[in-house]
Image (cartoon, rainbow, N blue to C red; front, top):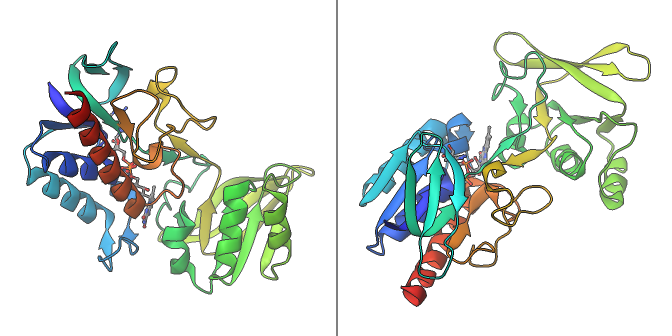
Length: 308
Ligand code: FAD
């Protein structure tokens, strides 16, 4: 039986595990893929105090730091169900696809999120070679260059406004015949001289030279004509999907599927906490996930000393 069982081994889960283990309590981490999204990242330049690193290197450092402590790391384990304690003092249970099941006094959910992809030819091939998902992370790599933002919702329009201040030119591509972002954002966007908005457009292909992105192809949905935009970067902003499907109906989720947490990271279930990209906490970043993981872990410890 664990005092703290962490589900997910990204920055939030690693941080939660270290904070729990440092309290001398029985801690476990079960993760499908230790390192999380960080494994899919190339250059990381905004993890404060680390000027520059690479995703796989940071992922390794996270795991090595956790291994400094007495933590049971269970890798390649995908959680499929949470069975909350029926009464205070009883145990929560997490079931895994492998058939295994673990019991714990407190659980920290840190299963992260994934960016929705366009699913067009070239997108996978040029990921991190021009195809990006995070303007805060990769915007500065395109200083003075031409980029496109795919998606005209709040995150797409925010990204376009943000990028317009850094890059040379932004083309915003929206599938619908109107943008869906808040009016105030649309007004700001329209005032920027280096942004072009193309509506009723479906991106059909990412073009590259084998090394990096050189352009994109879109179909004008009113005429079915194909057009090519030459550029160096593409920011896909069509949604961030929290990995919370397995918690539906058990833990309270926002309409977007994010786990709703309070200031201490507690969910609607006493003793069940959550941290990182899977929660309602805004701005999905490594430095934030690490802080939220620590917070949820201290929250869980607080809960333990009051209830056991
Ligand atoms: P994740 O990193 O998503 O980790 C989730 C963990 O949960 C993983 O171990 C996963 O395997 C596991 N998991 C998921 N579902 C289950 C399940 N059912 N059962 C068990 N385990 C499960 N942020 C920055 O600050 N700077 C950057 O430069 C940067 N660049 C990025 C580049 C890319 C390409 C991407 C995709 C993201 C980038 N980010 C960057 C965002 C950053 O990676 C995330 O904010 C951060 O990793 C979130 O941490 P997390 O621990 O909440 O979740």
